[in-house]
Amino acid sequence: MNFPLKKILLIGDPVAHSLSPAMHNAAFKALNLPLVYEAQRLTNQELAGFFRQLRNSEVAGLNVTVPHKQAVLKYLDELSPDAKKIGAVNTILVRGEKLYGENTDGAGYLRSLKEETAIDLKGKSVTLLGAGGAARGIITALCQEQIAHLDIVNRTGFRGEKLAEEFQKYFPKTKFFSFTFDAKKLDFIFKKTDLLINTTSAGLSGTQESFPKLPLEYLSKTALVSDIVYKPEMTPLLKQSQKLKLKIHKGLGMLLYQGALAFEKWTGKQAPVALMRQTLFQALS
Ligand code: ATR
Image 1 (cartoon, rainbow, N blue to C red):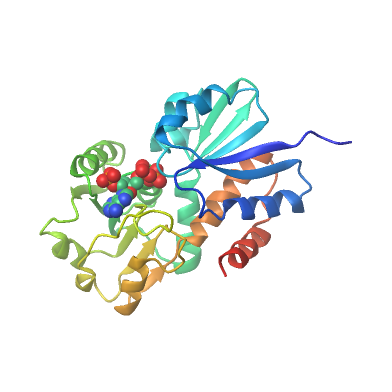
Image 2: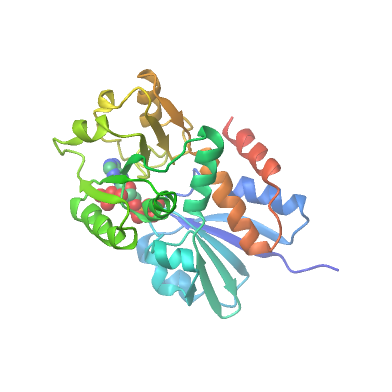
């Protein structure tokens, strides 16, 4: 029996760099699913029109990336408990008239971090760059692992401050602080950081944004530097960190596991993780 082909779309800006289409299409094919994954560049201005046409269309689900993870909330009918707490969505299920929002970023990041670095996050001091949708998912996952201290560093100061204030209420056991990139205190913050994570889109290929200068030389020799940007694989932050002989954690694992969790939500089937990982490595090389 032939089922009509349904689409899963990735919406964001930029999306041309994305490896998600290769990863998901390989998985759909392997499981013989009547689904095809496509990336669609969508500006902020186009978002409302896109959601007006989405219900009852050939689209069965979405991934959402920079810069729309928070902006899409107002178009959805229901949020999963995780997405509600995080306040951002990277995965949407389209079920007839209804749109359901989910977030697999935090869980995907955590799985990759633990698998690749074996870090025990309990009691750790973390510095996180960025205060957007991706940051929200990752902060939630880190606090659930009982980190002791979180410094949020963001280009737009008030956005970082608001995020720190909001999440301090949800996670009273973690101490939150916020700074901007030009804060004189960054060297002091870096000295006591166990884990530095870039969640900003700076350094991502396809954007014109340059990565802010950071006093990485103040990080302890045992600090771990993690970047969620996966293209280029060695981002400006990871390159600088490697030069300083610091341990690094690349972004590809988060892409894989957030994708595997999203796949399971769209299809109800177990994701072929090994095949998806292999496809990503091939696509990158
Ligand atoms: P996402 O949902 O993927 O997290 P987002 O909500 O647009 O995307 O957030 C992007 C983050 O990257 C923000 O923290 C943004 O900083 P601002 O709040 O100041 O906009 C950060 N960002 C993007 N380009 C940057 C750059 N060149 N330097 C520093 N931070 C940058």
